[in-house]
Length: 492
Image (cartoon, rainbow, N blue to C red):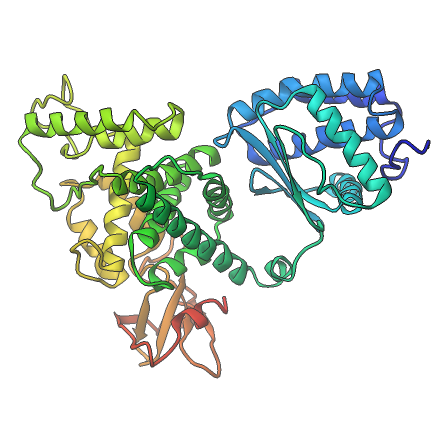
């Protein structure tokens, strides 16, 4: 290896020649499935690895390296065109790698390649990259040159500025907080959720100050992608955090909670991970629009305007929104929800919104239901604060009238009659917190609970035959001085 090239990993990589690497990259680009976050992330990392491998065998300016990059670019352009951020992000933390916020589950061979990437990133003191859509071949070549030089000299890349490639500086090794995530999943989930609350609150303050909802949302989008992944993994910890009110109830916490409940239903319906994230961001954007003067109706209690006036009001707000929406998927959903504001759940009579009777769009129906459920939990915007089980009863009583009955049934079957985070009293007289809903085929009245006992916080699955003599007698509310429910819940 000559002095002008970084020694990128060991030789037994399965890539005998640079031409083989570039040919494999080309084949991968042709078979890319960008709708599958895991498959796309692995292919993207593999493509980056192969380019770096070619650049380590030849010089960065060599024709073989440029050929590998040129073959990578069509795949990159296809990928970035479908990304909600208009970019692709790569982040390495220890033995973990994330692409667009999706932590990849790697096999042994893939992990070996990641370990080589980790060494290179560590030598150059970088932990993350963001490739923007406008990145050119020449800019990627310039980055590779700077990367090799920094890795060889060990002096970092803080001085490197390349258009359309953002570099996150620092060690790619895990921080203490990130290491804790592997030991205690509950604390990691809590960190993600609280980070979302803080970021959305700061974003809301920005909109209040500027009266312009067109604020940067890239960080929030990546947080929503991470939460979408947690829901896909059937991790119910985050669902228990929502009703615990870890921060004082306000529009920011309501916005995040509504987004998470909406993504939960979308995930349970089998929608793609990208669509699930779109739905969550649509709910968050709806509240940004609200801060700029676009009202958000509550279908379960607002009488609405006379049809012609409602139609005119909606069109007026839609016209106002067109000045700051971009025309991509989430913007389209924002406009749709404003256009359908004030409509009945289904249209029994001819209204000016439609030529014939039809139901509201699925996105509108999902977000309406989830927004109302969270308002009941938090006691915001004129709603009386209710326990989770009473909030479930409220939306059930309005199923088929103002809420889609199929979505209500899905919400109830997912959250349970006693939703996660509910505090209950058992027939034994003991108190407990619900930490997991029953399996779909099990009795919905018999969830998994953790006993509220400081000395022995035992977990009991009430659907287990061993506990057939124990039932939930009723829901209860605890005084804040009695017990830290959140502390017990996070022991899960």
